[in-house]
Length: 482
Image (cartoon, rainbow, N blue to C red; front, side, top):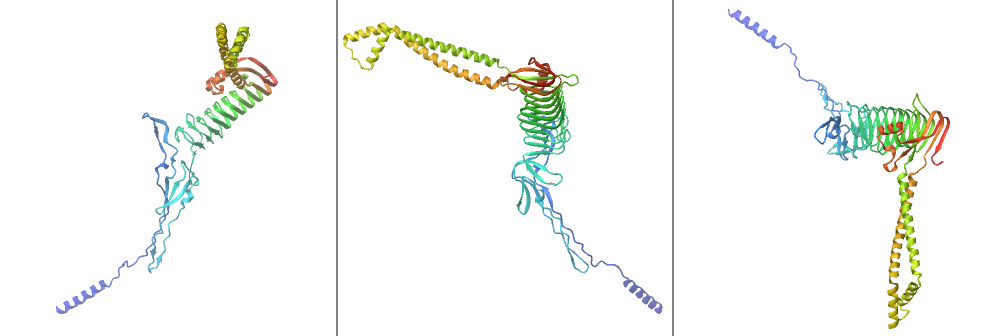
């Protein structure tokens, strides 16, 4: 029994020692990979950069669903717009041998790369900021990402109910898209690169449409309108400037000066009109120059020479002239009557003696003084009448001078408005009628009327007189000064 226990004891100890000698995997070291640095970034620090497409709230508390609250952000000078978050260099790693492994630094970015016109880069508290150098509108170039600030508003998405709604702008505007139908753009000085189907209203400057105006309206209160393409079924009105169109069809056009390459079925009212080829139009102007003119598909060609209605001025001039003549006649009558009284012997003798007495050239005795007083009493009524005639004559002469000055002013005013009208057509191709048309200069220029009134007056001829000329071919050359 003792031997068997000893054997089991030895066997068990050997088996335990084998278990303690078994190998196992233990992690004693690992490679530490480097951590790449964070890239530099540009973050916004101003809320003024963001657009607001919410409906604009009106003063009465209602909302205009056709207009956005803030489509084109505007900032003040000195406002911080963007901030540069600097890059980090990263965390280095180590190999199994303990050798360091360099970390890759984050990529850097230069804030100056996005600084466009009207901005500058400033460093404050170890941070770089993009700051507005001037007050104006924020424009971001999609290709380069540059931020610029200036007085001009730049749009690239067009004007529609989806993109911008109606626009009411306070600076110059440049749009690279189209202006859709029923959209209104109001401002001062605009350049539209796309087609215009809506309404453009400018307070001044130049409205330049690079392409076409199709069924839309352009009104400029104090500037010019230029259309590089075709204007069709449109209204163009430059109340204080000129209109230039390459080709116009079925349009109503009014301005101080109108220049068109080719016009058909249009109603045109201006002080000066210059058209290359006009067909089927109704044109009224003070100076009309056409390269060619004629009817078009049953629509007659009508020309109206604008002449100012000077009847009121003529009546005023006639009245002033009559009153001035009457005053002159009254002054002359007073002078004649005064001369007749002064030529009487008793009056002439008294006046001569009275002059010597007043000058103390003659000293009267008591008896002479009594005779002198009797003489004065005798000619007293004549002297009174002479004084009255003198005052009346002076008043008549003053009134005559005043009326003469008013008459000269009235004649000058009439001459300024009564400018001769001319009409010249270099080539007449079909029935063309020229009439005179009177307008009231005191009511302002006729081209300031509403488009509907212009069309009605020209086609109905409500201001016109009987035809002056009627030509079917050849050259038409007429002047009111002939």
